[in-house]
Every structure is written in C-alpha cells, then in structure tokens.
Length: 222
Image (cartoon, rainbow, N blue to C red; front, side, top):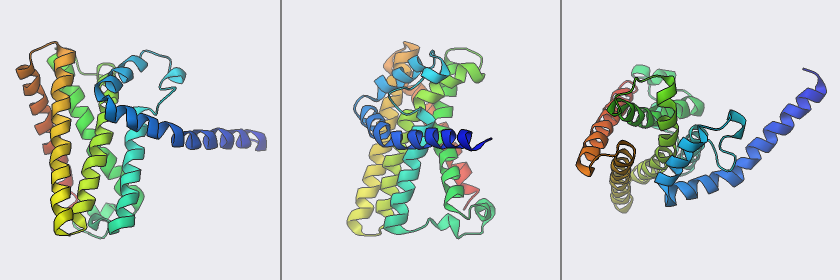
C-alpha cells in the first residue's frame, strides 16, 4: 500500500467514524420511538446491495456494539471497572482488558437476537441457515441495543449502592425485560400472522432460552 492509498483509507475511516456522531443518535431515537418499524426497516434493507444498505442509519450489529461501548464508558466513569476484569476464577482469567469485556458483552447480548431469530425461523417451518437467519437477526440487533442500554444503566445504578439507586436500577431492569418481552410478542404476532396468545408463547420461549444462555455464559466467568 503506497502513501496515497494510506491517506485515502484514513480519509474514509475518519469520515465513517465521525458520521457515527450523526447516525447513532438518529438510529437510537428511531428505535426508541418506533422499534417495530425499525425492525421492518432492517428487513427491507437486507434486500438492497451491501453498499446501499443502512444509508441513513447505523447497521444493527454496529449499533449494538456502539451502544455497549457507551454503556461501558459510563460504567467506568461512574463505578469503575467491572469485577470480572480483576477476578481470576474460571474463564474470567481471559478477561483482562476493557476490549475483552466489551467482546464478552456483545456476545452475551447477541444471544437475544440469535435466539429470537432462530425461534422465528423454526416457527415458520423453514430450515435454519445463514440466509434465513440473517434478516431476523439483524432486525433484532436494533432492539437488543436498547435492551443493553437499559439493563446496563440499571446495573450501574445498582452498583452505586445507594438505596434509591438500587431500587431505581432494579426497576429499570424489570422495565427493560418487560418492554423487550412485549415487543417480541408483537414481533412474532406480526411475522407469523398468528394470535396474540401463540405469539406470546413463542416470545416467552425465546426469552427463556435467551436468558438461560446468557446465565450459562455468565457462570463461566464467575
């Protein structure tokens, strides 16, 4: 790579990173206000050419990653590093830097999209493969990012260890899970064209599977 190609690469990288300052708040606002529409938007973007996808928003996985980075930064500023970084029990010995912890968290929160997407594909009686799983996984990453922000904020409040902050943090965490569960019921109802009760069953099963997977993963690092 010559010097001019290097400059061009840096130019593109700088523009991409700085554009996040515009598109992250826009993506967050649209996901908060109209989460189901954002999920539909993501489904529609999957039909476009790769270079034309998500032109006016962040891609769902990138949105999830940046959300976790922001929550992690807030945690460091308010309560310090997570205990898993200093613990040497189990696989936590592998988590020694902030980068390692962010990777662990994105894997943990990505379990929600992959479990929800898998349940939808199976409920459609379609083979689960890379093609059938991609669109629902991407759309789920949008709302998983909001879930990560709410649960992360709740965890920070609990770690502050004041009576009011513990109660507020627990309340926020419960609200986040209820919001996410309600949204999943509406999502399954919309995509499977089934009754609310059946959609609730699919959503509940996927939620339980997701939480069990997250707890199992967390137990390896505690």
